[in-house]
Image (cartoon, rainbow, N blue to C red; front, side):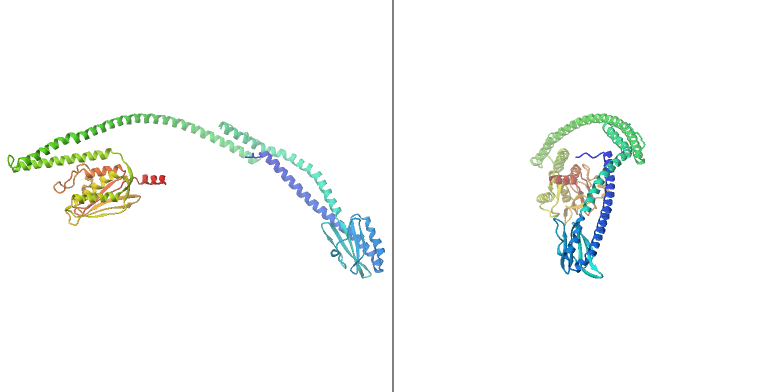
Length: 506
């Protein structure tokens, strides 16, 4: 990139351009008037000579004496500017004078019986009628070159150059002093700004010198700006020191919290290991005595009917078997609940409609004696863990199937609706419903709103559903009315994740 001119150079250049333009304009104006004056004087002299010759040659033309007219025209050789001359009489050339090496004007340029003149780029033609006592005998023309005008132009140009160049130099010398008074403070200010920028020392100040009022104001404003920057730097340094202190304190706090989190993580790992050990114990150690109780109870019922136990004893054994089966079911549900909490979440695009249809078909296969009308919306999709979402729909559809068992025309509906930016899925039935006053107990483990004699179950299913929904970042709620069915609605979160994931794939 080309380096810009300094302000001093620009001022000198401006002075040269201004003075030069003024001198050039004055010179052009003087030259124009000088040339006009020379042109007018040249025309006046040539017209005077033409008038004299036209008057004196009238007799020669009248008496048809071409020699006398030619002799009279030959007197023009004393005038170096005259190129040719002639008399046109009765439409023909009567007499002529032509300077050596010159030639007469073209016939079209010779205008008989008229007086006047004509300037061209090369010459001047003057016409005068040849008359005597009111009688007109022809027309005289005199042709002159423009050497006088050319000489005047060259002479004036030379004089102008000789005078203008010293005048321009004098004007430049005279303008140097005020230029220095203007440019020096600005150059000093520029040098000071470079030093401040390079060293970052805002305590430097520019000296105030006598100059133009605007320059003095600029220097004062610059000094004021430096003072303000210096104050701001002091405040920034103070704030930086305070910030460093706070960062150090915050770092110590974070290190302390990190240590605490590590300790809590270790405790959590230990608790998880204990939970896994407990799950293993529940899965293996507790199941064994339950299987033994159930097996021996079954053996007593089958191998000793009516021998030792009466009808009441048989009833008690049946109760023992039912209790063991229920306890086994509770253990299975607890294990499933713990697995839901510990398993990793694998989100992907999931066909909700297909999962719902498969769960509905499985319920119909298990209970062929029931006729339930399903209405499953097509094209339902979600960004979720497909395995966990299957557990959600199996539990919700299982509840809807169970609580609509006493309704003659049982209907279950699965669909989706929009709530702002959230996609809300719902499972609706026309079964027993419940009292909304107890809705806060729905999703607690072992919480039931109906007796076991009315509807079987352990009270773990909805707790499992809620944990899965919360792990997805969603929420679940229910709306119901006793005897008119219930609607369970839930969101799965992850919409923002799916959007960003789709954007990244694009």
